[in-house]
Image (cartoon, rainbow, N blue to C red; front, side, top):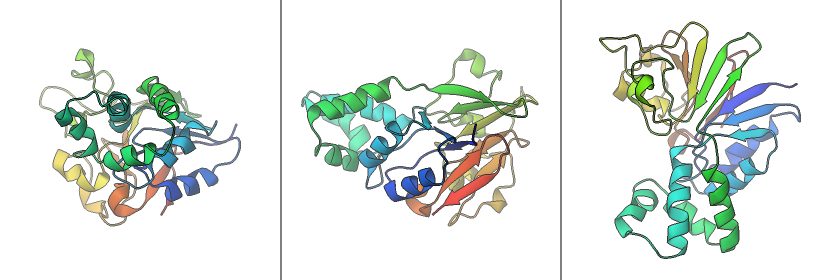
Length: 240
């Protein structure tokens, strides 16, 4: 068994994603936490790269959900324009849509079907017996909110500092790894960690919530940088 890594939010940066996968050995494993496409130039190529690599376990992000919802409708010209715009205009899906059209319709629908069946939440028990919770947007296990249901693709409330009535950090042996929120913008959500350490031009994976949460979205569109987090040692590797 090789090393087990996690990465997220490549957003169409094929060259960076290819470099990251080239760092892995044949025995390594990568959990990818979603948002392969949109905003960047080569979303479809990144999608193919991840779906075709047997070392990759792909977890759905909100941009994969956009693809599954709107791509089939766009292909049939059967959609409300304002709904499609939510993806293509306001969330950077136009480049993905235009590049996908270079492929046969059957291939595009096959991708949509594969993405539709991706898991939204997985756990990994590392070599130290620690439980790593893996989702795109992150959450807090056993918190007040999680008891009422969690939005694994969009939620950012869990990033905020401890709420008044309960402790929003995980239990001692639980760790959360997520993407979705670029570390450069965590100050909007008051993550309880030293935000002054974040280099907005060259961000690193950010550890917060008393060390139990990791944000691995490095805002690749701006930083041209992605990170790989070793889920056994919590060491980081960067590609830029």
